Image (tube, rainbow, N blue to C red):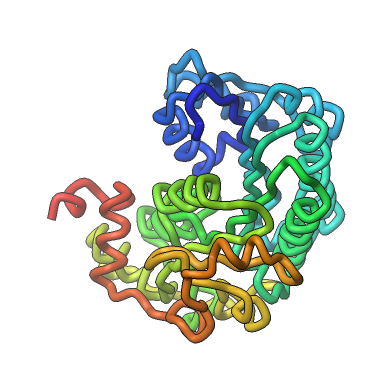
Length: 334
């Protein structure tokens, strides 16, 4: 699919983008363009990957004209650029609106103008029945992508919805690790909090699956097991042999849910199970060709990961972290 193709990755210097670009370079593309605002991150990534097919463009998704220019020769777009921190989006909603909603609309218009084949828009589990401004902007972004697909005959638009990326910038994993290393208490907003986590490798697999199998208008969701935040903290305490470290509850931040969901009750009515790993939410309305394409897939309504949460054990959390080299070396070799 990607052989000899030109691929644009917005926000490509982040943890998810870095892993995705690494995977894309294995697909024999002609060129992978990383489009982001951070100059130093681009330089670091350029040196780490050191591949002549990798190109970098400084730019902002708020700049429609710049996107139109860069999309003029692009085959596929992975749209990762976003303001993603819940508290920042709550405090500065206008900025979140400009990037997460306006930026997504700019991508849509630039992709159509440039004759892009497919656009894969990255969303979040916080877009399912959103309660915070970040989730609301991403939910609107999903709607814009689905609508664009219904209004355009050439470019296909697809959403993917992921969870929290372990090890990404601002990840709670880094916060807990730093607090442990400094001998401080681990601060947890609420000890009953549950989150969905995935590794950068799982995240990239989700994107590549959506890109290859998506036909337009769908939302692809990875079936992730849920994790209690206190269990994640306990695994890290044991890994760093810091049994004296305690957990301190500090109260939920504005816009913070206790339990996230992957898919809303309404969406589950027109969602199917692609396989053991992926849920696909089909576009609402009359789409006979799309329905026919997924006719052999069972309904997702009532299935695990949709109707309820399957909590990871401490051992499963430890294995997931070890597999992604997110534990001390002495622990990953156990």
